Image 1: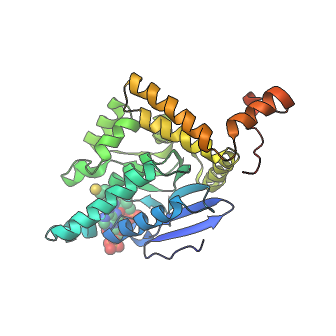
Image 2: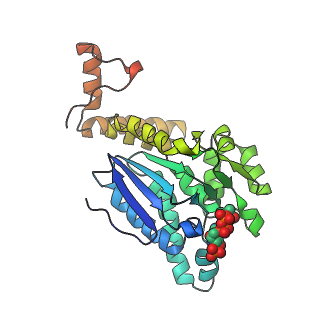
Image 3: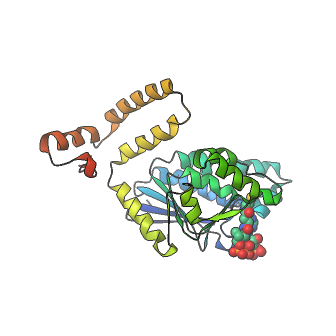
Length: 276
Ligand code: COA
């Protein structure tokens, strides 16, 4: 599938990995209305793009994303309720719903500044890897506002109560190492190794059955807000659905390789996929 061109986003595809790059480096990739429209379009397109096995979200230049654009998203829309509603909707839709439910694995590769509204896509991604010297900040309190949009809500999923309130209320920034220590990101690596480590993780994910991976993340993410009885019912139904629809017949194949062929042991990696 041809890659579309956008004003504020670059999409690059290589060996199954699609790199979605926020591309306003001169504004530290702050999110303008146009960036929200571009990102919504790009993500919707990639959801069903066969070349995309893993999606990596990163930023051009030395910044991942400096949050909402204070000029173009906030001040410029103060007296334009129609555009505010349109941009606000697009902003929430891609940063949370579409990204959180993206049908393939997603990795936030945090290459630099990550402020305010950028925490929503950071947390929506399945994985996050940061440069050790990346700079994170819930800076809103310094602007006379609080972490809005969905930020305060999604922080509940990704930071512990004490850490979240500490950074929400002090507005202090922290680096990639601290983000890893708090488990806001999976791990932090020296900047020179960031891309290499991201590709390593993406490659590991691409060895797995993509249908199983999709179901696994959907089940985990959806069950978080269910009670035990609902979760049990939902997982039972989802298991049947996966078994019925998986074109790779992963469950039968893995079991056969373990029990009959004795060519595979689950403790040591994935079973060999066969063509659908
Ligand atoms: N909204 C609008 N413009 C922003 C922006 C934002 N969130 N973040 C950066 N920019 C713009 C700056 O205004 C500047 O524009 P200009 O060249 O027209 O003056 C340009 O990006 C470069 O920013 P600058 O501050 O000179 O770069 P820096 O590398 O020294 O610092 C940051 C980078 C990210 C630390 C700093 O820009 C910053 O603190 N930004 C605000 C981040 C924030 O609090 N975001 C949450 C918003 S709720």
